Length: 183
Image 1 (cartoon, helix red, strand yellow):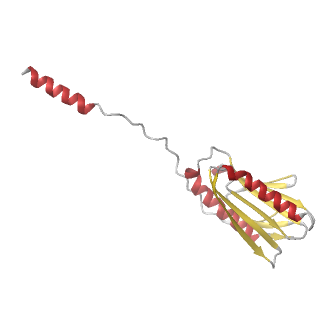
Image 2 (spheres, rainbow, N blue to C red; image 1 turned 45 degrees about the vertical axis):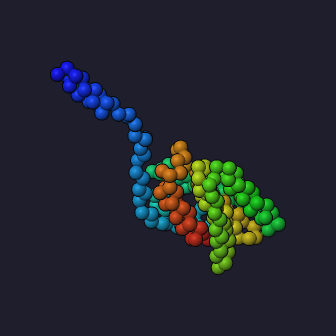
Image 3 (cartoon, rainbow, N blue to C red; image 1 turned 180 degrees about the vertical axis):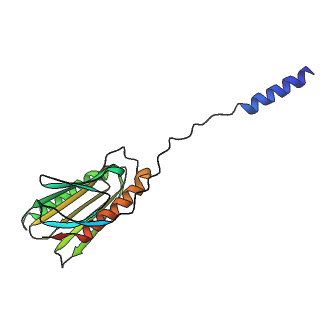
């Protein structure tokens, strides 16, 4: 009888001693609200464009901060009055700022925008991977005005978790670029 008890106890101990694996830390589900756009005319800059009703715009010296408090993200924009002969340098500088992100980027795609009726020409840079600024753009009138923007998060960068937010904000930036007009 004793060997049967020992056998049952050893069997239970063997089956009951499995390794415990903790679950990975979870993240909150992020579902941004549907954006409605309103025309924003910057008082210190010669431009107008659409801005989402989910954003708060603050004008700063030489630029704008378009903040998305619910998403912990800010689009930093800068206006640079320039000359046609200096415009190539401004575009090169913008590309170098994007290139600085290449170190941690998995992929950088570039899209050209052109609206000859409004005199707006630009580039949109989409940077995939663990990068500080996943969406950047540069717009010009090809003569003397240059407008640049870069999206930054106010939280730890985890590309997989932030991808829905990045996609949402990319659409906002695209709407901004497509509606952009010089005054």
